[in-house]
Image (cartoon, rainbow over all chains, first blue to last red; front, side):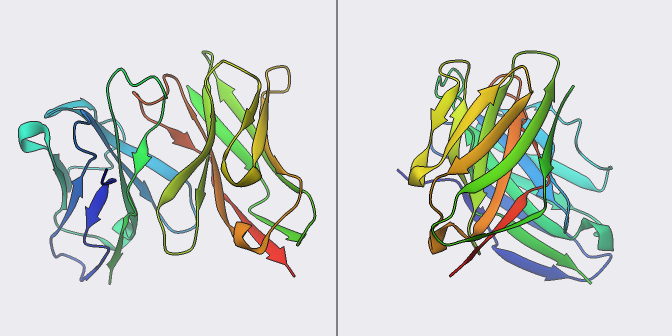
Length: 115
Length: 114
């Protein structure tokens, strides 16, 4: 079974540009999460989808960030326009609702560098 | 509210020595607790999890952790460090296991000295 995949693995953009990160969850997982780790700090929650609906977006830093999950499958996280402080590693995770082994499966992350 | 504190951003041990990574949590409800590991250039991998069953939890690669409610701790241990254990380790807490957001600690980088 394929794990959570993220694309691209690395992205380097200039301040003011737009970047779109993609996450493909494990097939059949209704829950999809985005997290971010800014250099040297903890991994922080951004938002949570249940299927195509946003269940919790309390961690989204500002309105330059837009997450979508059309059709309840893959998700995209767009940053527009990017700022220097957006640099970091963006992780995606998924879990199956009702799954009793209580685990979110994480992808390898996308390293975003804004110059 | 929930939070996790990891003591020590960097820990060095000799190969074959005991590994002890400390984690204390704060949670207003019975927590689910996790340890994740990130090897260089890889994603996060679950080492072990506590979900209100046995307080001593065994994970992969010889790691284990003990949930101590009285101390609000969930320290990670391994009797004998191996070079391949060099990685960054994250303690994390959730209110509902896999369904809600996970709150992470700041991470501890483990260095294993030959």
